[in-house]
Image (cartoon, rainbow, N blue to C red; front, side):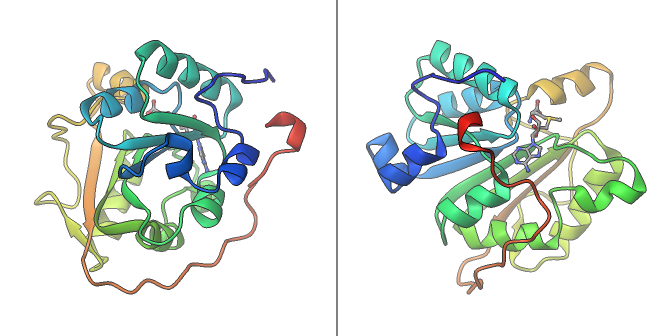
Length: 225
Ligand SMILES: C[S@@+](CC[C@H](N)C(=O)[O-])C[C@H]1O[C@@H](n2cnc3c(N)ncnc32)[C@H](O)[C@@H]1O
């Protein structure tokens, strides 16, 4: 466990003290979130394409956070911050209603065993949380190399009338100009397709604040943060 001292790394206490992401960035540009950023290659690419937006990259894996911070620093980009925090915890506690312009999840842990599938991040409860935090018209992007996860994500999203599909099919293998993450690259190089879903939140919805589910490891001891 290495202590991360990078200036782009935001411990939870710093966010609490600042009071908002706008205060941390020093501007109120639209805010986007990448969940499970791994080594940070995707967030650096997307943030470079959109200097007019702010990006928060999060992961629960300390080593990945450290590598992401190095990548952000090397890029010289000033519109990205990194946090080591669990996705649902962050969304519940620090990202309120209509606060995000976009959410990105690339190659999340697939939990391939049938008995473990309930551990997957994407499910109905999570989508309620996503919809609560996305602003109207905000976009939820999800990509996976795992066939079953891609098909079920497409099914779940396409069946939810609170979303508008930005493609013609529940998922697509066409990535267009969507940046490629480390894991996506690994599977594309093996000739395996990526299942990509991109859905925007319909305008005029009233979404109730979702309840925080129990059973996830949501926080770390102070000395680990
Ligand atoms: C398979 S890796 C993919 C990394 C990267 N997105 C990519 O495509 O190269 C999944 C990442 O998600 C992180 N992760 C898993 N569950 C998470 C959660 N609930 N909140 C935040 N990060 C999570 C893991 O630590 C891991 O780094």
